[in-house]
Amino acid sequence: MGIRLMALALIPMLPHLPFGQSSLSTSPLGIGTVKWGRTEGLKHAPFSLPDDATLHQLLDAAEAAGINVLDSAPAYGLAESRLGSLLASRPNRFHVFTKAGESFSHGASFWDFSESAIRRSVENSLRLLRTDRLDAVTLHCPRHDLSVLSQSDAPAVLSSLKSEGKILLSGFSVMSLDAGLLAVPHFDYLMVAWNPGFLEHQPVIEAAALARKGILLKKVLSSGSFTSVSPAESLRAARNLPGNPVILAGTINPHHLRDNIAALT
Image (cartoon, rainbow, N blue to C red; front, side, top):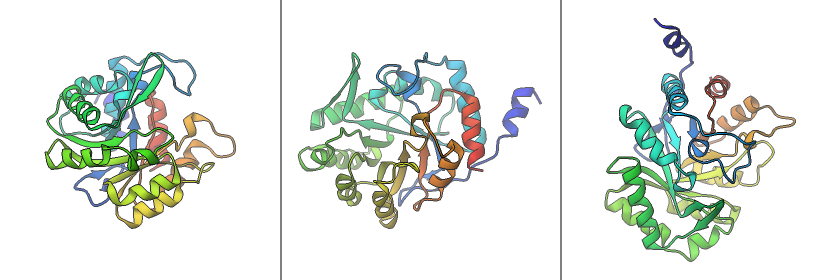
């Protein structure tokens, strides 16, 4: 056995658990891919996009650990197109959660939740990810997320796209407590910010778990900024939340990925 295969064999395995009431079984850790496709407008130290060899190392380590969730978005620059290429040799190994509603260009985000924009976004994601059905599409909300629920066509459009067989699951990325609680009955899963220093949206997690909706956790590592709580402690605390949440942790470093895996096993 080569050195690389031996190293992969030593990575502990994560379980697969039901994702809400859906047909998916998901690992408790997923990988965010914003840094796989975009360098601008992020709350991180300057970095360069990783090459394909590095991303294949990350995917190798993810597979060895049982990680089967990748989170992407049109607003993540090249991330969707790179995933389409990278996963061509790994069919049916990962569930790709992508988004709609936000685009990013020339250093700024733009939002459009009209029916035409959501449909155009989904069709483009299908093309870039090289698939005929998306596992999941999350409404990528701005700070005024309540208006996405009350003043846009987007929730109804996602429902129609599910009926048409173009997406399997619909989700909502929570930016406010009121919108998060209102969204629970209308989506298959919620994406919620949580870490030991930010508990304001925990009622959404509890409501989603009670309703047997899937839960994606963002900001668990607080963009890499911690003081009194270590990243490992934050990951373990997140895993103990109700509802079998999937913790999304973005990384372009295979060593950091292995540390995250170790914290949850």
